[in-house]
Image (cartoon, rainbow, N blue to C red; front, side):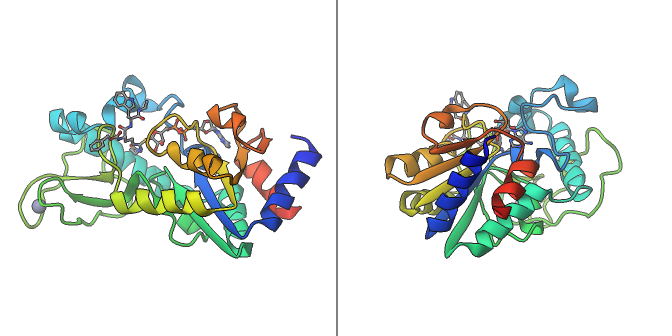
Length: 248
Ligand code: BV8
Ligand code: ZN
């Protein structure tokens, strides 16, 4: 990552009136939360996350899928936001207007001080009834076992509680997606961090900014389809690049 790129990125941020910060699993990697593409550890190693994160998997084996999400939720509760999350919160606070749009289902942006991030794919902390949709509460702390955990029944109708995330094949929450598209269409600058930009329709968000003439900064150690439309590509890990960017 060249100093000139960092300088150019910092200038784009200083000159921007309206900023969108768009994040994927890579921004949480240095907190110790594996991305979807990293090999899942332990019991889950034998499973493909893209097959587990589906309504079919939950229908076939609710205890396996609920156990996986409970394990992931406990893992998030045991880690801290990293310097990348915190630097993004600083950039957000300095900007005249700024909104965080995340594909992540953890609460690390909130815990780092970001205000009301838009969660395009839901949250590990918003389980709901799989039938009547009523919000359900989750016990704090790690599940008793790492493995299959039968989902609790809904207090109201008795159907199984499900994770409050968007599974493959499910529609994104319309209000969240519409708000994200509007912000991306009207911003001067979109900063994309830690996403492979291959899951749709979320991956449309940075493309909207590019089509509407907004500038784009990308932070990712690997190339992605967004390299072609980013004004500045900062190739490095979020917890190293973002604090350097916020400090320029
Ligand atoms: C929909 C929540 C329609 C759950 C997630 C063919 C068949 C079937 C479906 C499709 C198909 N083709 C397209 C589709 C649609 C499908 C899709 O896009 N599939 C892809 C795989 C091709 N999309 C959907 O199904 C969506 N719904 O289309 O519905 C519809 C419409 C109307 C009515 C009914 C239905 C729903 C998609 C949402 C799925 N849920 N998450 C959960 O978390 O369990 S997606 C999940 O995977 C993540 O949220 C993320 O968005 C995505 C990718 O995960 P990762 O790869 O881990 O993360 P990311 O992409 O962010 O990549 C990690 C990046 O970080 C890498 O680039 C890496 O280099 C970088 N990195 C690593 N370390 C660092 C770093 N960067 C910075 N610093 C570091 N240290
Ligand atoms: Zn119910």
